[in-house]
Length: 110
Image (cartoon, rainbow, N blue to C red; front, side, top):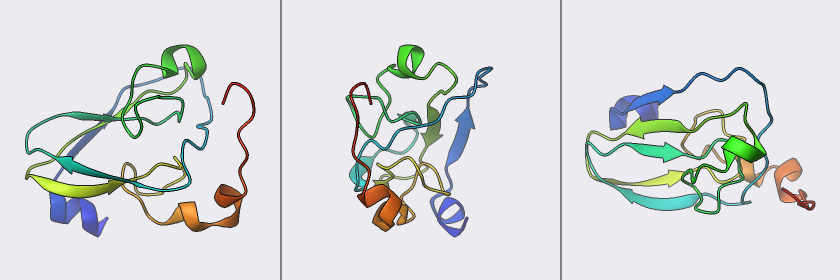
């Protein structure tokens, strides 16, 4: 929570009616330069081909999930979660270092 306060970002998530589970998109975070006032759609489902941002893949691959939109209040370099298991979305909290993420092997369609 300290990071959110320090960065002063606004985060919103669109409502969804059908639950889906995210897939691990990467076993590492993504370093990203963000601009103040710009809205970024962080991929929640893990299916986007434009990680860590959403490309709309959730509409067919995980219809119960929607992107988490965040708006930085300052130009900044951030580390965004790639494993989709963070407890501090959209930011990396180190969960990708855990064995369940590092041992993950994608199957066809994930």
